[in-house]
Length: 179
Image (cartoon, rainbow, N blue to C red; front, top):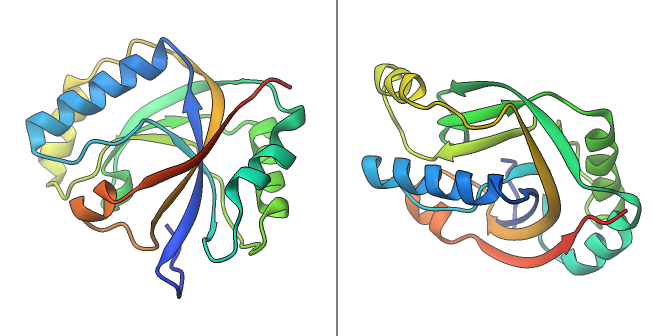
């Protein structure tokens, strides 16, 4: 995630619909318990901006009016050296999703460059490559595509580098996609 001189950011999350929401919550909880890692809501990050003077509820209300729920195709399960992408489900980039990310940027007071990379993290923890590979090999996803039906705004530290950073996330707004 991007740095912010004030130390806080607003992150706009695309949230899975049921039954995927319950499935990913349970998977994240299982992995977190096995690895002593933080719990968090399953999400795909759409846009990140500075929190100063941002009104997330107003941004969501003005941005989401024409967007319907999204169905994104899973392209794989991966691991990386980035704390915020330790283990994650990668989704195929969708043109409409790109438009939503751009609308969120345009509706924000602090418009920042943001490269949309639709993925849903399963754990935030520093792990060895071997441990990541073992977990990836042990996870069999129940879906080939996932429906997403709402967008949430979350306040967090600008740098997400620890369990404490993840546990400090605070959801401040949420709106359903009804288009």
